Amino acid sequence: MSIARQRSADATSSGRLSAMMRALRTRPEHAIVAALAAGVALAMIADAANQTGGTARLNDFYREAAPSYLALTHGHLLAFAQLTPAYGGSLVLRAPFALVPALWGGSLRAIYFASALPCMLAAVAFCVWVAGRPRRNGASWRARIVAVVCCVGSPIVLIVLQARHPEEVLGDVLCVAAVVLAANGRAEWAGLLVGVAVANKAWALVAVPVVIAALPARRWRTLIIAGGCAAVVLVPLAAAREHGLTAAANGASVGSIFNPPQLLWWAGRRSWIAREARPAIILASLLLTLLWCGLRRRPGWPTRSGATDALLLLSLVLLLRAALDPWNNVWYHLPFLFALLALETRSGRAPLAMVGCMMALLVVVPLGGVPMSTNLRAVAYAAIVLPMIAGIAIKLYLPSGRLRGEDVRKGRVSLRLSTDQASLP
Image (cartoon, rainbow, N blue to C red):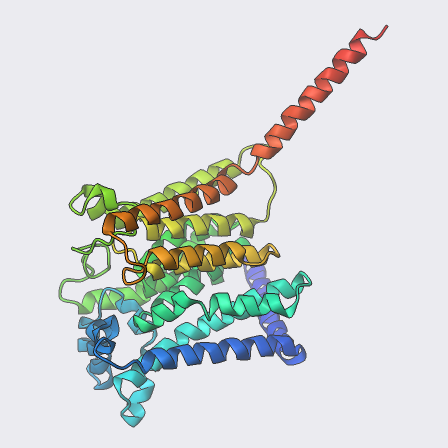
């Protein structure tokens, strides 16, 4: 029975892929959106790769990724693994692309361009999916162009590319896609994508409970697939490194960085919660997911699209992941913004909330932006983020408040009617 169900799922998957390819051939608007998004993505990568000046070589690519990729291009596989930074899994995933410029002796700029290409191609695919949602709801071309701008042409995406962290974009897309697939019952694909996201960067662990909870069935199978995909990439790295996957090697340690735009600023750099912030974020994700699962089982819980609720939960945990991280910077919010964009377009709305949140974060979060004192920046950030967290939490965990109020009013009306009927002769 399970074999037949698996064959049916495989047939459905291949059928949907074929339908997507037919749509690109028969509907020119799909191809136009894809070409526009790809053009914007290539232009942004080229602009970031061609940065000049003294600050161009001070970004993380030259300090963290370049030594490892240079070892790889010279054929030193063990040195490649040993020199990888905390996000070494991402370098492994993009290594085939980084090797291409070595065929003609390309520079580090060419290696960066090639390694960033798969990340932005993932964003292009996500953009085409997002742009297709307004079309299904009868929206105009304007709505689809807005989707392209918000996704691929976002100022935060440009900041990510200029900071040489394209793997952030890849992780964002993989987490959102995994949750949507899980809500639609695509257990194997959801496990594959979230496993690759975890291998890409450890912060994606916050999305794993959401993916598992969004599934209608086969949760253990998805968890095994996700763990296997992450282990295939990370275990060899741990074996190659001298100290394995230590807290510093896997990104769990926060070190000495302590930026003002975060909700733990007032706790202090040396506080326990600041030192253990990243494990606490994963624990918070698990607890919020368990709360959501428990509330959904209550009788009278309003029936709503599983993907809608799952994207709301994902938005909440991704926003908390940024707000509670002592290293917090503007691109830590990009996963949250992508999840919010998917949520709004899926609901047939213009991404106004996503644009509003993005503009507010761009004003407050970048340390080199609007001049502020550190305490004022922390206060401004809290004033922006806390209402976002509260709004999402209320919509996710208290969606039946209005229904309960209507039920109370209906109960009063029915009680009044019954009393009146009893008083009639």
